[in-house]
Image (tube, rainbow, N blue to C red; front, side, top):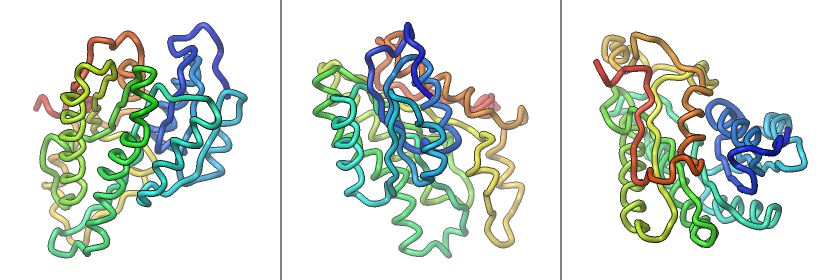
Length: 250
């Protein structure tokens, strides 16, 4: 799949994490369709190969829980495409557990994937983004702006990701780059389809996180992310967009 020319992202180079499925894949497809050259990052090599099969695309299989992966991802992008304009941190992991039963390893994994990986990737990408006045879009969650039962690590990480977004936006306010975040609600993604609940949950608590309008399609959220990556959003910096099918309005 390759760009079709004459698009809003012509001449741009992007890294999209979580690109083997779900929201990350939807974002990557929109950027490619808009003319961007895209490096997709994920763990599923077969899905990556299926999506990133054109001359203007590349893929890199990585476990972003490993801090060393960030430098490798950015290096792979710059080696292939000569620079970097857009970083979309869309990879995430969420498993519900009773807080008192969360192991040290599970807690560290929640933070590693949902918070540390976006930080390490942003740090590695910064020299290239500053050179080309690029942008970062962090995919947080409505769990980053409210509480969710059985999700202590996930909520802590996503709240932290919003804090990271705002801290970087302030620090680089005069540098030309833009840093924003998107907080999606429930989507029809493999992560949700394969979701497991803790033993003996209170489903009334879980239902408090749902929108009465139902789940969204990944492309609906990808539309907002694509906008934030584009020149049309040149005045949007340090923003946190909630895209949740009206859930937060209740």
